[in-house]
Length: 266
Ligand SMILES: C[S@@+](CC[C@H](N)C(=O)[O-])C[C@H]1O[C@@H](n2cnc3c(N)ncnc32)[C@H](O)[C@@H]1O
Image (cartoon, rainbow, N blue to C red):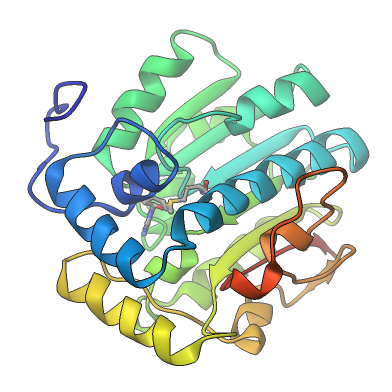
């Protein structure tokens, strides 16, 4: 049983990437169908929950870097996922109060819980939108009100592009966004990669696809292509625990099959 009732338009019987990820992070906004897929994946890849947490921590550190060190004051988080701890607007609020944050996700449960979390504040918004339909996303009134592409903006596409197969033109979407972004803007990306365990990753992707929650792994070179036109900030495209870890607890990067990086628009 879910811990909260299903919002309108949510089908609890079809697994959702957002809710599977929520379960991996130890959240409560997931249903039996999500947990069944997650448990299958965990049985094959016990490092999965650690990797999800590491990915989430990368997101937090990247946003802190962008707000506190790079001076960015507008954040567009595409494929934001369900609210959990250290949500982007909460990290931004500590590092750079007065910034604006727009979350975009195509999953109705994400938007319902997200809207409930932010309440009536007008510097943060949750937009329901599919990144494959970029024009509609960009036309959303809250996005137009809060994001000015003529000023530096941080676009966050963290653990979302691996849900978009090449046939849905993810490179075109990212390059259209890049052309809109003012110089000095940033793009943060996290993406599943077949390295260092190509066979296991392919098997996992097949299991997830059969269970109704498909994703695809891309090679380092393919992930780098999303960052064309951006200069990678140090330390480049690395596993999440290797990205500016500070004093964070060390996790073996060899167990991570995700690459994360932040690029600055030239
Ligand atoms: C694994 S979660 C990542 C959440 C967050 N970005 C993070 O890294 O912690 C992926 C999210 O992307 C969303 N998503 C997948 N495909 C999408 C699309 N085409 N348009 C918008 N959101 C999408 C899912 O609904 C899910 O909430």
